Image (cartoon, rainbow, N blue to C red; front, side, top):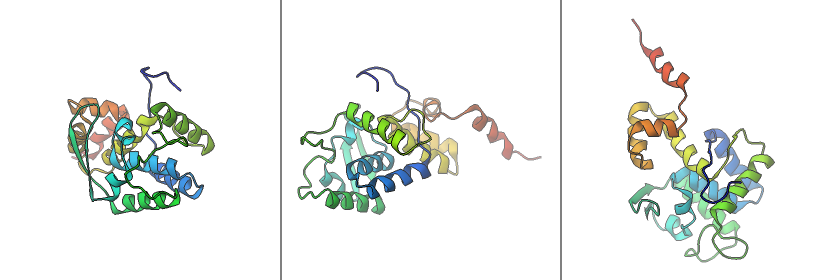
Amino acid sequence: MALKGQYTTADYLPWNEAMQLVKKLYRDGRYRDSLLLATGFMTGLRISDILRLTFADILNGDMLIINEKKTSKRREIPLSKDYKKHVEECFKALGLSDTSKPMFQSYQGSVITIQMVNKILHGLKDRYHLSIEHFTSHSLRKTFARRIYDTAKDREYALIKLSSVLGHSNSAITRRYLSIKREEILNCYSVLEW
């Protein structure tokens, strides 16, 4: 685990593995961890914004509206029915009754820290034998972005949209952020026919 403020590398988790992990964590009774990963994968928020969420933020509407901590920009995020259902199931499984409470509390009742999230993710990597090398809190956001890129019909347009969603100044930064490899870039020529 890195020290606070230290540069670290984060990788993305392949989408199918990410969704399987969310389900396994729920089945194993690790409801908070399942909820944390699902929230990161489905919203693309930075961990600092995820940790500020309450259950009411998710359960009381079809749109999450948040002012990002880092940029102070307003984000509107449509919430899928499946994600909202998962949040509701975790809320009930955790035995909670007050939706105004933070979603990610420690056992002592305070909001967990980013350092604790990274420690949890490192433990999950080992316990569930994940294929990811650097599994950090930023991996959740990268997994979200990579899923959008991988499923886009027009990947160049997806990069432009993701640049805006992620707050990047241009799509070249987003391309590097998504770890788009040289082979993938060269592969774009394979669609050309004579």
